[in-house]
Image 1: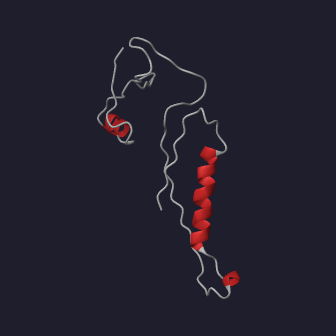
Image 2: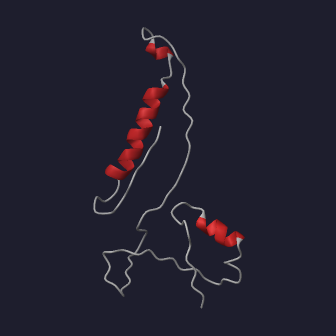
Image 3: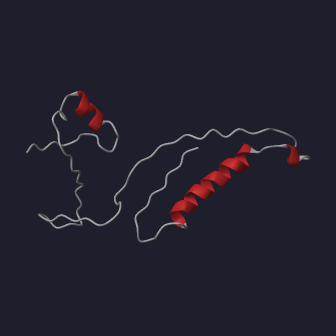
Length: 109
């Protein structure tokens, strides 16, 4: 048995570097574990389903059509569209998931 410890696992680059350096050659299985101060020393814990944090990135391009405030029905306002998207994404966390399950949402515009 060989133990390997992945550097930079939160930044999504550690495993790639390990693969490039050959650390994963002849590997039959990989098991991952996170440490937690809530679990007593020498104990391990798990539960069904996912837990802890994951990261995902996507980019959305929102385009619109300008116009005049006197005829807003002829415009496609990207600010209103972007605001609606941010609110909808936040509601996935705040209204669609169990408040006792850990969730994080982070958006940049």
